[in-house]
Amino acid sequence: MKLQQLLVQGNTFEEVYCDAHFQAQEICLVLAFGQTTLLEKHPPFQLLQTIYPKATILICSSSGQISNNVRIEEAIVVTAIQLEKASFKALEFEDQKDNSIVEMGKKFSAELLTPDLRAVLLLSEGTHVNGSELIQELITQSDGKIPFFGGLAGDEYRFEKTIVGLNADAQPGKIVAVGFYGEGLKFGFASEGGWADFGPEREVTHSNKNVLYRIGDRNALELYKDYLGKYAEELPGSALYFPLSMKENPESEPVVRTILAIDEQEKSMTFAGNIPLGSRVRFMRGNMDKLIDAAANAAMQLRTQLPSRPQLAFLVSCVGRRIVLAERVDEELEFIKQTFGNETVLFGFYSYGEISPDKYDLGCELHNQTMTIATLFEA
Image 1 (tube, rainbow, N blue to C red):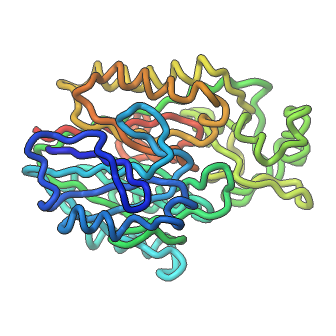
Image 2 (image 1 turned 60 degrees about the horizontal axis):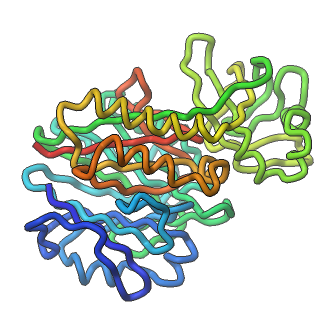
């Protein structure tokens, strides 16, 4: 595997990293992340196609793009991956045009699912898609035997418009999947949150997919406001400081759910993933040190499990973590870099939802408010 990373601003670019013998003219996979406003003001596809004429190019909006400089960049971060023995194939799905998540599942199964499929990178628009349904359909199609990783596109802190593109400039309503093939590819996955529960566990008594109406005998939004206190006046933005922990049943591992919107008339809250009827939920709050420690723990898990240092680490963290960590946000990136060392190139983005296998299942789970890490090594 050979790697190159660029920072792109308008029609100019700066090289951050480049392996010896990397050949931009050869076939490679290019991943570009930037804010929606930046991607629309300076669409990068034409420039990237000039630099990498044979490449498959993915472009995704973010709530902050991560470079190997171990910081969140203002420029578009472009990472090019040149596989030497393994291969990949990309698939784009237009959610509104192609009708449903089920149709995407069928398309995925027909075009990407083969016996030598090792893992799938998934980048989806993040403002309208139901991430839980998207992931469940792909797990169903793959029988839970293939790991998926990636995330839901971000839009800074606006929650208005996210865009994704495959071999074209990014647009709304797009979902892109990239299948990786070959025995020589070695992946590693980890995900940690670091949020602390507070208050009692309660049962969800009225919900519809990712819309939560009632918890116990209370309207969900009213109960949530009681817990937020002075922060209730800053909703929905302040909800990123106080996510929800959810267990589908008493034996389930808890997952974190981020609030995307509130409805004052219905007294309901809309989440990035489903909140099933009968599930158990608790409110959560963040502590800066614990959030940073969780990111470091995710990296350490991989470092101790992997037989060798990975060549590439793809980081997807939540916009809520970026808001809570504020000026200290670079610290979670720095700890990861220190753990892997300079041999590992970092890249990624801050998202509206993180996609990663959980601790016990190979397939994947929709996470919120976590730091997820996917590592890649080509033997």
